[in-house]
Image (cartoon, rainbow, N blue to C red):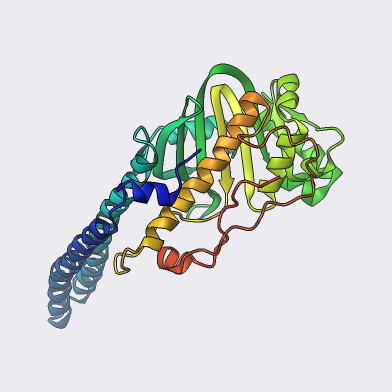
Length: 352
């Protein structure tokens, strides 16, 4: 079980004043970047305006455009770097305070091939990774980060097909390729949708399974697997109930392949973001802790169910009601979320 925020803070791992000093330094760099971008971009634009005034209108307009673009690019790069420095300080200290073996990094290229291996989303054209946490759950190495996946639509447009936390865990056991994904097709088209699912040529190496006697689970999930017996054994009633609880709050994904277990939630939230102009307070840092803790606890339960058949700390839950929903999460902190404060937070693990 994770240390509480109060425990982490009490042991001296979280220095709010030091975080605020880092923010002030980052904000100063940001202002300097804004000024330098204005000088460089403005200089180019002024030259363009002069050329346009003396008759070289084509070249002049082009240079004005270049000047504006240079300003925004320069400022965006400096702003992004300053925010990353601040996030690295806060999140790094939080996870080290929880467990010295935990680590935080801005990104990890290994997430992209792992996301593809999970089989959660087919036919993708671009994947980006942000805010990666590493450590151990019950002796197993876990990797938890934010992933955004897009798919091209036509020449100049694309759509987001997944955005949210994605995690994988390394185990000593080998698993048959299984992908448990939101059942959007059958939910929309009924029996016709299930026929279309079976005809999905992108999953020729997996079989579409039906979980008998659990209409609620079938309503939310489509199960594709190369190992029917193991998959149905792992998806016991208590685990199915837990997954349904998560699915009522956000699109939920689960799978395993070779020695990896995969988990994800497509909630379209951009976590661990803040504005450099906002003061770092105790509540801002607590929100960072809460968001990490929620996903860690969910992942811990999922991994425990997959590897042992029982949720972490939940027992066998023989009388669990499949219609029970998880309790609602607390209201998001506007100091932390900024413009994202109205988006739905991720669900905490349900209490049975």
